[in-house]
Image (cartoon, rainbow, N blue to C red; front, side, top):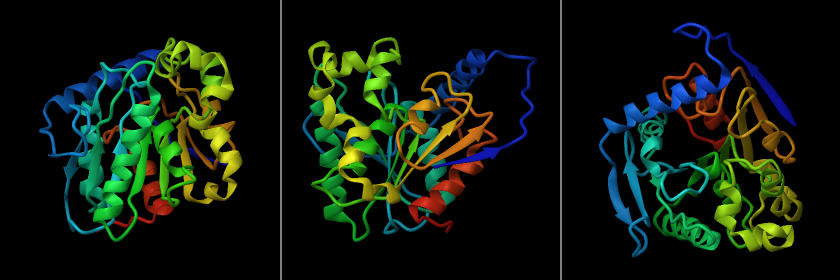
Length: 271
């Protein structure tokens, strides 16, 4: 199930290749992020990466949104690039935004998953309403895992350019071996060894959870191809002309589409 959204975009600075568009957008996001102070930090575990940043604009008791950053699970890529999105979502939706950091240890994916569980359980104990979950790229994988967790209740979920199919991601060598590095070489060799982490496998066991999830993917995404969402069996909103970072860039012409989808699908409203 896919919905295609078109938007006419005029790119400044002459003609750029699709890869140059993504690279330029990432560098601009990094520059913007460098000027943003961290939100209020709260630790949910003893490790240096087991923390969340709170961004609050509007009612502090409204339904929170958990934002999970991407970076192909690499230890070198943290939450910093997601701060512009965290700040923008808090302001635009008048909801507390919880920007989550998590452990990214090569060959130890369960540490990452345990951190997702820890934050979910923490917020469930603090908030009357279940948190909504938004994740980008590898963070999209993680929010899908949370959405399809049979032990925990369904939650409103928006996966932005997610790696929704780990097996095909390994075959296509997305991130130049990043998925293999995260899973560990031995685990990555056999799909049965990572089936409990693969969103498409989890969905097959809990098809009713599909109703609470939507994937948002740029048609021109080079980093995580559109096929990752389209082939997942999940509802997909395709953004015609958008690349990998358009879905998290508050200055992107596609950002209004992302906001609208959050409001529509996750039950949030403007303040």
